[in-house]
Image (cartoon, rainbow, N blue to C red; front, top):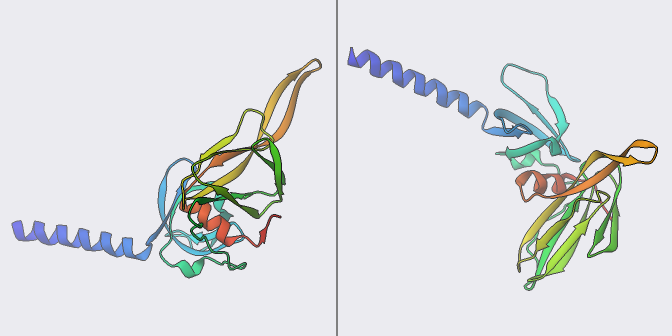
Amino acid sequence: MKLKLSLLLLLIFSLNNINAQDYPDYLINENGIQFSCKIKEIKNRNIKYYVKGNSLIITKPLINFKGINLTDTTALKNTLGTKITKPKPGYAHVYIYNGKRSAFKISYNDKELVKIKGGRFYLHEVKANTLHTYKSTDPDNSVEVNAESGAIYFIKGKQKTINTLTAFGNSYADVTSLILDNSKISEYIVLSMKKKAH
């Protein structure tokens, strides 16, 4: 009886390992649900992958995910040859990127810095041990970076609609909020982009 039970447990464990080896990659969606997949390509801020039981390749914006595990880095298509490099001593790098289509402006310490069109990123080198404030079009949002020497930060722009009350009733406006996001998702989005903002 013990032998049969041991063999059964060994068989279940082996099957689970085989299934895990089939799909070593995973994604975490916006709801925080992790699922196994095979990532085929990350290019120009989009990801192509397939899941078990579905032979069709799924294509989605990478910005729609919260987390990633990519085992085959050749799936990342870096057409610009961008390198995420460590800044020189006394400085930090802040990558600001637009993973959507609409352009947005960025101000830095209350001065206009750059306009970032969809699918582009901007590298801002800043002094370390200093507080740096970034804003976009959302009046209630800003990102503060207390830069450490040699650190790398990623800020993503996220579009949303806000409702404001005017003398004539409700008014809706599309604005861009900024989010400090030092995840692998942000790094892969920047590396896969085709253009830099100037």
